[in-house]
Length: 438
Image 1 (cartoon, one colour):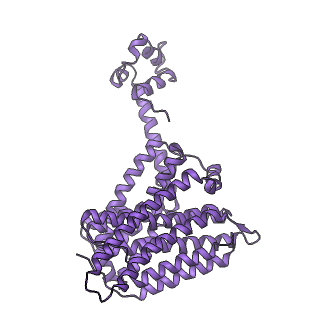
Image 2: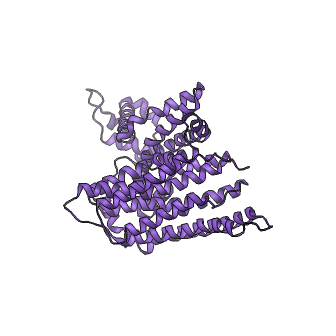
Image 3: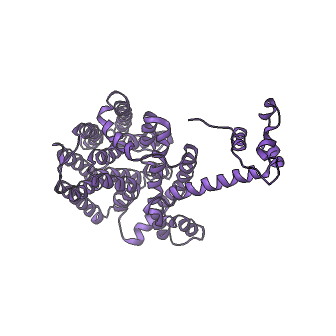
């Protein structure tokens, strides 16, 4: 991708500029008068003196470009109606309004921001190529969950980290995928929906490896119950070792997806590239991405700081808020995109979005959180307790069985969606208090 300096941009404008006034001498000729060796030394101040119209035109072009980017980035989504919640959350925090209100406004504000971060990441991927773009999507695809997890770790709220990441996996596999199969099946009743089993099998296999790494600390704790030596220390060591293995496995999964076996995912990429093109420039997308990430960090800090107050005020357990509400906000982009592709009978893309995001959370974000907590001196393990780990195991197994035949219909979506509703009801009635680990 070619990038011009400011002087080169001015010279390009000079060559394509109409006369500034009615005189015979034009600004372009005036600027072109110096010898060639002096043209490269022209500065913006020199051009301003010789031809103010050029600089004014450049400023107008920049203003038009910013307006166009603002229209695409901010108003290019139906979730734009929730953007006013962002400044309202900041105002509520500044004036010390009720903490439940701050939590609710922050949660609403995070919804469009998470969707727009996904959009900006896709725009940057058009310029960086498939390899770098794939790595960027893998890193930023779940930016909201990662930021909330890091901020919760900083405040030593380990249970919030565990429950929110677990809820993200459940949401992607049951809610997002289930809704996609349901609405896609209803929209294509007279068509047989077929997808490639290869990528579904790969993601299921990796998710089962992650499930093993979650089951072992739980079984380890029950197996050593009643022993004299410290179970917590041994469990923590096992979890940290398992996290390193999971990160290595995820690196192998990325290499497999982007390099050695890209043919499994080529159809998905070709379908996406046939219909979409970059609508904003590289640096514009990068600047917007950085800005929105900073805003997400601010709102995530509000969410983490006020989650207990919202739980007490609303009479809802922290478990339900962390496992159900937070992941729905973080997965807004995946949910919308996956359903749209399912409507178009492109289940390969829907499966790639939902299962790819769940795989990333299980094999990258969770073990990364354990390693980061280790560095910060915080004890976080992979023991998610019996109920949570059981829900995770059931979710992965039922999803693998659902996708084993390579065809889909709306009943499969109904089953996955109802499974999610049952799990949500379970954690809604669960009134386990939040325990902050010192």
